[in-house]
Length: 169
Image (cartoon, rainbow, N blue to C red):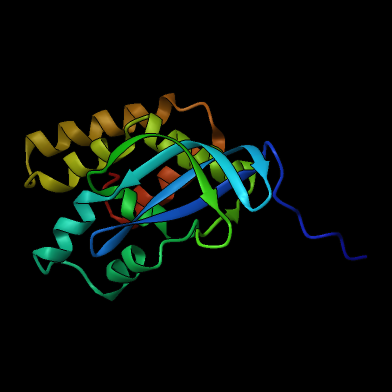
């Protein structure tokens, strides 16, 4: 009736964090190798600079602070509506000191697609423009981008985020 808890192994999808100043950047990737308590990871590290700036300006609530202080696979998509900086991440995590959570392949694909498709740029453009023709054009571009996405899960998540931000017409 009860299955075994999934274990960390080569090919597993993971979520981790790395301290960057006052807040955490987050990492999602694939396990490429294991040796004892050391795990090789190949993925992406994301610095949510837009959300950090909003907090510094005092334009956010407690939830945003919580996302940066305790990022997890469930809440980081909310950090991805603002500008982000990302780069490839290939490093070794130590399971004794580093957070390393297993995530489902669909969640990994959604996060990876969100970054690789530059969705934070499109959403941030819409949010940063004042109401008017430029913002309407940015919404059209975002909608076109959404319509061209192949991953159904990514498309559904983007639609839900846009709907909650009230940026869909």
